[in-house]
Image 1 (cartoon, helix red, strand yellow):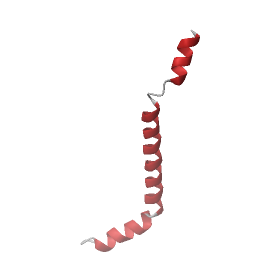
Image 2 (tube, one colour):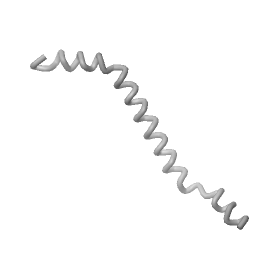
Image 3 (spheres, helix red, strand yellow):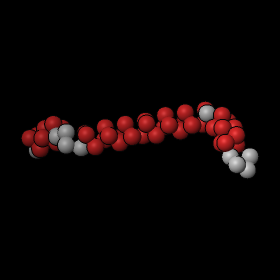
Image 4 (tube, one colour):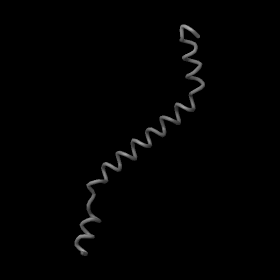
Length: 53
């Protein structure tokens, strides 16, 4: 039983997938934050270049 617990503790096969998931979540949160911060400016820009605006 002790050997099984040690083997599970040392197993790092899922660590990379978790790290990629955390990195993707962080990038998505930053992108949402940046786009939210610039939403007024982006709205003004698209209104200015719109042929109907």
